[in-house]
Figure: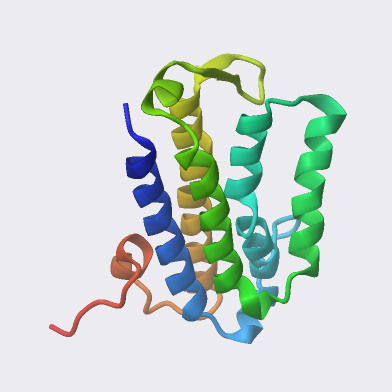
Length: 170
């Protein structure tokens, strides 16, 4: 099982890559959507701006129903109001908030405390954090990479997506 510090290092790496990808975008790419009824790049960025903190707070609070909807709604509203130019700073703040939550847990908490998943099954807090907080960032990072490539940055490659850097000159 992972420690809080190991999970936070992985989250920090995902946020670093997401911010790198954001830096590669042009303003025109914000309106790109790969298809009907799919998010635009801007909508994806807004979702990324709160996905990990909202889940970390939900795990901590372990609330269901309308209370959980309220917890998520406050993040949705903040994302809607966010100036998209501040996205990197918002991602840094999200990391600080997630870190504060995870640093409050002991290794025993991560390994033995159980929380409910969205489907209502029990899972250890550590596994839940990796499965959601971390995995959601990685998944939506990949989606952001694909959106950016499709909307006019075909030169981006695996270095950009997996390492958060441009390919070094050969």
